[in-house]
Image 1 (cartoon, rainbow over the protein chains, first blue to last red):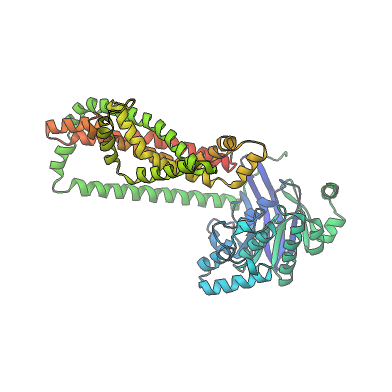
Image 2 (image 1 turned 135 degrees about the vertical axis):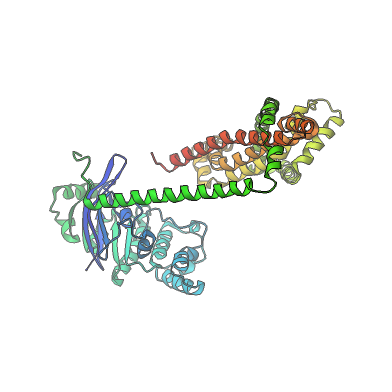
Length: 244
Length: 283
């Protein structure tokens, strides 16, 4: 079943055309990695999917429903879509536990106790049981990023968008965050992630989409796109990436 | 990059039409409700039983016209007062703020003094300070103490506002993330150089709105010094009002005070908008 479908999505900022007609389909339960050079439109694609940016043309469908229609309640849509950013974006004035509980309490109307029980469960699952009362500034990058992941998961989203969530991390911290995503895949979570972790994409992603110049130039099973790309551009990108 | 634009799809054109309609509907509602509220307010005032008498006592057009030159001359004093006071306040406040945030142990006595000053200055009503400075300071007959009413007034306002402004500046300095200190020091800049070139500029940006608040408040409080005999706008209005048994001069002075703060407010709106844009990287 197709959970997310983008068709001819266009977005420009001023005179810069960032998305020039993106087509992409993501099945429920799949992990899809978006790869491509910086500036190829990966982040913008994710932000358009979460309605943080308004598309200039084209359609984004979530479970068959056009969410880019201006009559759609964007807040209601975002409640169903979790998003984690490169720079963690935890709320610095709240403890980890309160970061995680904020949305469930305000939007899902959970009681404080319920929200906290569920939050602690999730935190424990991602190795943060002892950090519930800590404030974001006192955590390592990897811990902050896992906390941000837990915050997104606490809303039980149907779709998770991850925007280069390991790019700001030390190499030894990247692993713990990627392990967390592996665990999500086992749960059957649908994930679209922009990433530069090619090895991870090969091991964990179901499909890989290569973005170039505002379009999805190539999309297919992870092993095939990464090992034997059909498009010349994809090959150039992957070679340069390995060399760098 | 040959394709620079595309023909919007029918779906997109329909969305754009919907957004345009929605936006004009919102404008209409906002406009309608504003006119309604203002109209209602005007009706309540104008239909009140006392309105004819209030109009004659407060809104006498010929009285307003005849008092205007006098009040304007008064405002010249207000403007000079707050321009002078703003400079002295900033100097005093910066010094006090620095003393309070500097990490040098040797400054402990100065720090205590700075805390006491802030408490006293913020705790004393400005009107009282004006009386005490205006009449008390000259009575000491000290050498070098300003004897002109104008500078006594500036001294009083500076004392009263220095505490507020110092606290605003201090809050701004503290709010700059420690990593900025680290980056500055890592380049080899001294504490003072880091403060001046790295931390203070960021702090000032952040506290610009509350700073303007304090200065707008100061512009109004220049009227308080009329009690020690400085003939500024309010005093002029008072003199005329007493002569003509009419309150219109006060209204003229009030309008003048409002007009005085508006350009300042717009200027800072513009400044902070520009700063926000620059900080957030938008073009």
